[in-house]
Length: 397
Ligand SMILES: [Zn+2]
Image 1 (cartoon, rainbow, N blue to C red):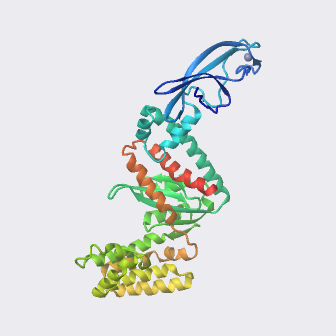
Image 2 (cartoon, protein in one colour):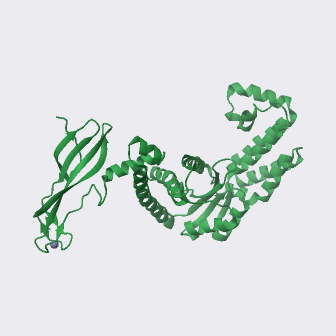
Image 3 (cartoon, protein in one colour):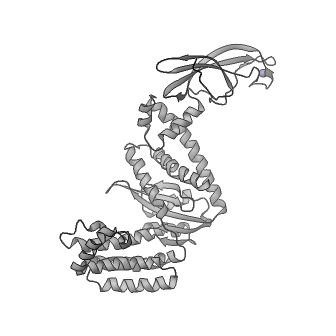
């Protein structure tokens, strides 16, 4: 006869039934003596037996239900009737611990709805299981992050995530070393950003670097919260401004819509077969070539390995941008002049928001998946777990 291998060592199987739709396995705890929950004396006198139906991991895609026989003992010392707890089934649970863990893991990366349908479990049950485990895990992660930050210099990264174009932004605070999301906020003004920083960073005195874009309220909040930290304007945000300036030049020339992709890419990333087309375009349109040259030159600036050389290159670039006929490049030159010390700080402390990019993408997905995160705390817990827990695990192992 087919026999189910349970791997729950505290139980023995007393009977098993196989149905078309599920397995039903009757189990009883092996111990024949338990400690009284009231006075601590051991008792082996069984008072009665009750049963409870508990769902466990499916076997070969067939649901497995356990009929757990619960022995109640009578204490010889204090007369109390008691039953002993199980290792694999928490008190008052209709699901084994490993089944709950499984459901939790299944929901990560998808939706509660999905898992509810896939495993034929009520939506509210999946939800309850998921968030009860999620909260525990989130607390655990937060603990580890705080412990790590207690003893290490901290590099933070503050970034904005637009979930959909034109939609509200989420301000996300990361520990750049750990690649962990520390907190999120829906606004991006000075007051709420400062609140986020003060609430989430328990050891402000350890914050040495903060990577951020060129949004002024962020800078003000960072300077208030961590007056001694170095602020680094994120390289990718600066490069993006330059690329957008080139795109403005491109838009003024008719018929170049298709070329956009090749133009905005860095030259060495343009595929061999598209290069001749790109070269031809640059030869035909002087203005485009001018803008393209400015864009590529800017990338050279970022490649400098030496602060003094970088500083020299940036001065030259700003001059060239101003002397160009393009308003879009004048704008960028102005922005860069405004943020120059924080942009140049990169060459002393080369941190970027690069590694948070993937996380930003994930956050968008989580938000898209669940349109109705009416409960922002749940949304945050989810982001925290999916973005922090997993990255973090990778870091540690
Ligand atoms: Zn007792």
